[in-house]
Image (cartoon, rainbow over all chains, first blue to last red; front, side, top):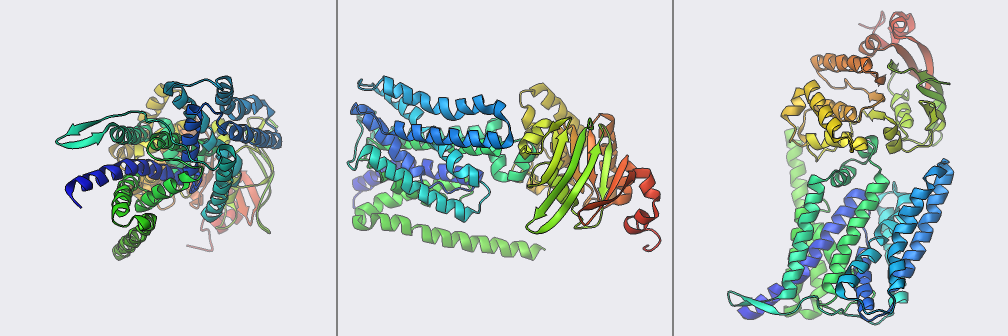
Length: 349
Length: 241
C-alpha cells in the first residue's frame, strides 16, 4: 500500500464513517428514551434512498402505501384508546396528529405524480414521507408494550424489521436504485484530492450531530427526551408525556435515517435490504459507547468506517466479518473496564 | 362530593396479594393529611396508585373530576405531584435542568418559572450553590431538597410526599417540615407519608393509620397524637423507649 491508496481508503472510510456516526447516534437516542433497539432503523435508510430514487425515475414511491396503512392502524388504535378512557373530546387532535400529518405528504406525492421533480422538491418530499414512519411504528407497535422487558422489545423490533423490509421488497422491487449525485467535482487540499461529495457527507453529518447536541442542551423538548431516558418514572411525575417523547425520539431517528439515506444513495446502489447492513454497522458503533454515551458512539462510528474501508482493501471477502467481529474486543474491553470500576466502587464502601 | 380529593374504594393488588383494600377518604383544600403505618402497610402503594403509577380499581376524583383513568403525566397536568421515596431524579442531568423540568407542564410561563426557580433557590440555598452539578453527585439530603424543589416548580395543587425525612439529619428534617407547613398557607394541599409519625402528626391537620392495606384509625392529627393505640404502636409510647 502506498500513501495515495491509504488516503483514498481514509477518505472512503470517512464518508461511510460519517453515516455510521449518524446511525450510532440514532440507535443510542431511541434506546435511551424507549429501551427499544430499533432494528428497522436501517430499513428507513433504504426507504429514504429508494423514495428519492423513485422520484428521480418519475415513479410513485411505494412509501405512500406504507404511510396510508400505518396511519389507518394508528388512528384505529387511538380511537380504541380514547374510547377506553372515555376522552372522545381528544379525537380531533388525534386525527390530526396520526391521520392528517402523515397523509399530507402522501397527498402532495400523488398530486405531483408523473412530474419531473427537481432536487429541491424531491428531497424535502422524501423527508416528509419518511419522517412520519418512525412515530407511527412506535404508536402502533411499541407504545402498547412500552413497559415490556428489553428482550421482548428487541424481539418485536426484529420481527418489525422483517415486516418493514418485506414491504420494501413489495413496494420497490428487488432491483437496486442509485440516485444522481447531489454535488460533483473535487478540489485540492495540500495535494490531496477531496471530492465535493465527501465534504458534503462529512459536513452534513457533523452539522446534524451538532444540531442534536444543541437540541438536547438548549431546548425544553430535548431536555424532556433526556429526562425520559434518565428516569422514566420521574419524567411522568413532572408531567412529561413519555408516549410523546418516545414518539419524538423515533421522529428524530427518522430525520437521521432520511439524511443518511439521501447522502448514501448517490454513493452506492441501494436495495430494499441494504439499510439493515448500514444500520447494523451503526449499531456496532453505538455498542462502543455502551449504548449510553453519545460521543463514544460517534467515535465508534468513525472507527467502524475506517476498519471497513481498510479491511475491504486487505481482505475484501471478509470485509463484513471483520467489521462485525470488531465488536467483540470492544465489548470485552468495556466489560473489563466496567468490572474494574465496579471493584473500585466496592473498595470505597 | 365536593371534596378537593375524593378517594373511593381504591384497591391495588399485586397478583393475588391485595396490597391496598377498598380505601376511601377525602381531602379538603389547603389541608395537610398524613398517613402513618408500619412498613408494608401499603402506604407507598396507595400514593403510587393515586398518581396513576399503578393499576388500581375504585374511583379517584380531583376537584370534582374523575381522574381514575388518567395517566401519571395527565394527573401532573391537573396539579397532582408526587415526590416518591426513590426521589426519581434525573440523575445524569444538572440541578438546574431537574428544576426546569419540574416546571415542564407550564413551559409557556417563562416568567413564572424564572420566579419560582428563584423561590426554590431561596428555600434551598444549597441547591443554588450546586445548580450546575449533576443530580447524581448530590448528598442524600440535597437530593431530597431537589426532589421537593422539582415538584414545587410544577406549582402543585396537591403534593404527595413519600417519606420526605428519610435519611435526613434532624436539622434538615425540621427545615423540611417548616417548608411543608409553609406550603399549606399558600393553599397547597399535602398528603404526607412519614415514618417519623410524631413529626408528621404534629404538622398535619388530619391523620390516617394504615395497617395491612386498610385504614384502621382516622381522626384529627392532634387527637391521634393522644390516642393510646397510636401512641403505643407508632409513637414509641409506654411499651418502647
